[in-house]
Amino acid sequence: MGNSSRLHRRAPARTVTAAALAAMMITGCGLGAHAPASTSGAGSAAGSIATSPAERALAAKACGLITRAEASSALKQRITRQVVGRSTFGAGVACAFYAPDVPPSADPNLAQPDSVRITVATGPDAVRTFDDYRAKVHPEPIPGLGDRAFYDGSASVSVLKGSTYVRIMVGVANNLTPEKILAFEAVPRM
Image (tube, rainbow, N blue to C red):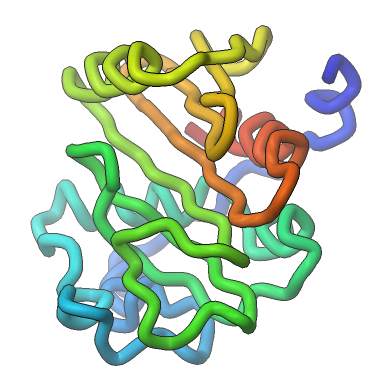
């Protein structure tokens, strides 16, 4: 993986203005044209996370850690929409990038096949959540990524950098390589 960090450097993450963030929240991070109007049991995508300023900022951070082009490359499919949901591991929010086969009714709070899901938690809970998850799986350390990082053996790459925890899930078979690539692209933007 030594060449990966050198080969996959990108420009800094784009800046999200308050108006753009508000539009993203109204349309479920609606950077795609087909944000779902509702989700199974969760209400609208925008309603699936609280609308406090801290959660809106965290949603913008999650959606800004990788680009649509990077998510598309990881899936080897085009991305048709982006939605914001809740973290599946406790505190935090997730930004999901969906390929065309993900149905409009997909719950943004759950991992989906044919998607890339970036979950972010910050603050004191981030380190505890990272350590708790690592204790539940058979972690494979990933050197040189953030302060600490590991592959959980089947579904995701987790990265801790300072007081920010990012978990990256790519919903395809043999996902370790695309997840590592996305993680190396995301870390400078954390």
